[in-house]
Amino acid sequence: VYAFSDVPAAQLQHQPAPAPLFVFVGRLDIEKGVDTLLRAFALCHARVPESRLRIIGQGVLRPALENLATSLGVQDSVTFCGWREPADVDVELSRAWALVAPSRWPEPFGLVALEAIFRGVPAVVPAFGGLAEIVEHGVTGLVFPPNDATGLSQSLLELAHGSQFPQHQLAPAHVEQARERFGRARHVAAIRGILQGISRSSY
Image 1 (cartoon, rainbow, N blue to C red):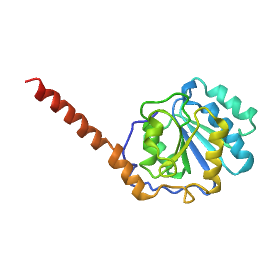
Image 2 (image 1 turned 180 degrees about the vertical axis):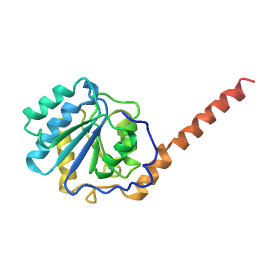
Image 3 (image 1 turned 90 degrees about the vertical axis):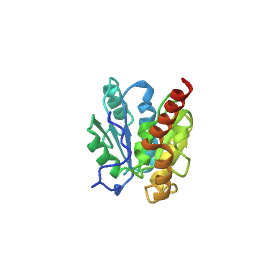
Image 4 (image 1 turned 30 degrees about the vertical axis):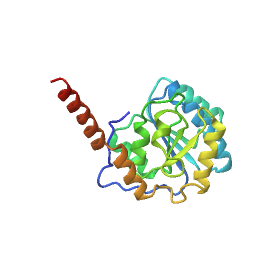
C-alpha cells in the first residue's frame, strides 16, 4: 500500500481525533482479516457509537467487505478510503487512536505496525507471528487472540474507553526504544555485518 518509512513527514504531529478512530492499512484480501475487524468494530460501536473506522487499501474483497459493513449496520461509521500515497497515510495515522492489523496468518514481519509505533500510534495485532514480536502488550499496543472478533472488540473497547492508552498515543520513550530496536539503520548495520563476515570467511 505504501513504502515503509521510519519517521513521518517533519510537519506532521500525532494529534488524535476527538472521538475513537481506528485505522487499517493494507490489502483487502482474505489474509488480512478485515472481516474480523469489521465484526469486532461492530461490537465496539454498539457500546461506543461515536467510534469510527477508516480502511485504507484496495483489493478484490472490497465489495464484499462494504456489504458486510452494511449488514452489520456500521456502514455510516466505516470509511473505505482506497489506496493512499505514503504522505496521505501519514495524515491518517496522525489522527488515529490505534492502527489495527488483524491478520489471519502469522506474518513474518509487520511493517504496518512499526509504521504506526514509530509515529506514536498504538498498534493492535494478533498474538502470533512477527506482529506479536513487534508489539509489546500495554506498551506499544495491544495483542488479541488471532481470528477472534470478540477478543479484538475488547481491545478496541479498552482503547475507546481509555482504560488502555488514555492519551491515545504512545510514550515518547517507548517510541524511541522501538526505533532503536527495529529501525532501518539497525537492520542495515546487521545485514552489513553478516555480509562482511561471509566475505572474510571466503578467503
